[in-house]
Every structure is written in structure tokens, then in C-alpha cells.
Image 1 (tube, rainbow, N blue to C red):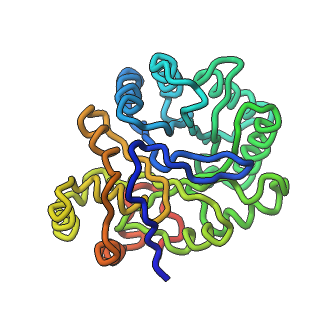
Image 2: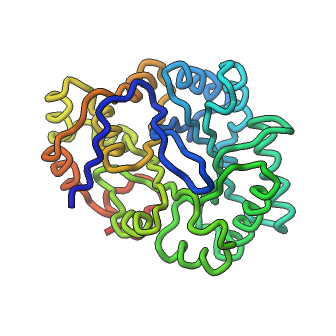
Length: 291
């Protein structure tokens, strides 16, 4: 069965991917990991001007407030922008964690605001902490301070564990954000999430430029007269993932979103699929159950 999804004509980065609870997420996002606060504001502004309508941040990044400021300065209606953030600190009580989450919401969208998707950032905090974070997320959702809740860096065993304490209304989670690119395809967890219809958000889709000279990648880019980065974003889109490319350079931000109106062939998708190196191909610290 072919895994290629045809996405040929789309003028902006807003094609929706369904989430639970009748919400949808734009199919292309903009990441702000490792962007200093003073840089984040400008980068998010450039991204919104380039057509991005999904911004991905986290408490750990320490730039949620700057994301919120750039969104307000854009004058784009809030309901046209999708914001994801994540909670990593599971220390203290559920009430303590909920308090930190409420601060994140306020930093991003004000005291009366909301975020669209709030994730457990990583299972590495341990079983008890990830359970407390999840229970706080459920309460945040009940308070209408987030429209959907999900996870990040979760493998099959983590999702199976989550099912033992998540309320039926919140399982399966709305999304799972993991490292995904041709060299780290994480097939066990992608297959499992597909079976449960859990959307996959792909971080590090550009492999932090570490594979930009790969001969297969560059040949395909030349054939389409596009950049190697655009090929990687297209690969993720056609796999059905939600890629989150990151850059702090205005021209690259715009270029990474210019991926509509053309498509990789099934043969090219197969060549890129063949680059998978499993866990050895990961560049982040949290590859989950790679083969």
C-alpha cells in the first residue's frame, strides 16, 4: 500500500489535519526550539507573514511570551492561528503543574486566552510525573484553556500506559510529536499512531541541515528546482505528518513554506524512504523505539 498523500495545490500553509474534538491543525507548522527570546519575536513575525498559521513552542524553550507577542502584533485574528506548547516539569502536585500551565496560556494569549494544543513534552520525566502532567492537562482542557491535549516523544509503551489512566474522552491523545525525517522514520510508533488515528507532528524535519548534501536529496531537489529543505518538508507532508521546520532567517522561513503546487513522485518518495537509519539516524535525544 502506498503511503504517499497527494498534496499538489495549496496556496498557504493552512491545509488542516483533523484532531480530536472537532478541531484541526494546519498541516505545516513553525518551530521555535532554541530560538532566544529576542529572536523568537522576529522569527514568528516573519513566519506569520510567510503564511504559517501554526506555531510550536514549549515551556522548556522559555519563549512562549515572545510567541504570544508576535501573534498579537501580527493583527491576524487569533482563531486563524494554531498554537502548540508543551509541559516538561511534572514536579509538585497536579495543582502545581496546572498553575504552570495556566501561566503558559497567559503568556501566549493573555489571562482570558487559550492554546490550541498542549502536550506532555517528554516521557523521560518518569511514570509518576508524566501521569501528573496528563491529569493537569485534562483539567486544563476542562477549564477551556486548551482546545486539545496530546503527547510528545511517546513510544508504544508510553501510549499503552497512558490508556490506563487517561479519561476515555482524552484517549487516544490528540497528537504525538516526535522526530521524523527520512533518516529517522520511527516506524513502530508511526504505525501504532496510524492505527489509532493519532496525528504525528514531525520535529527536526530538516535534520538541522546535517544531511543537506546527501546525494539522493540533492538530486531530487535539482530535479524539481527547489531546495533540499523544501524536499524534506514535502516528504513529511506527503507521508501525512505535520512538519515543524525551524529557522531564524527570514528568507529560509519563507522558503520552507513554499512547498505547494508540486509533489514528489512515488519513486522519489521510495528513494527517501530507503534512507532510514532507525535510531542511528536520530539527531535529537529522544528517538522512541526506532528500528
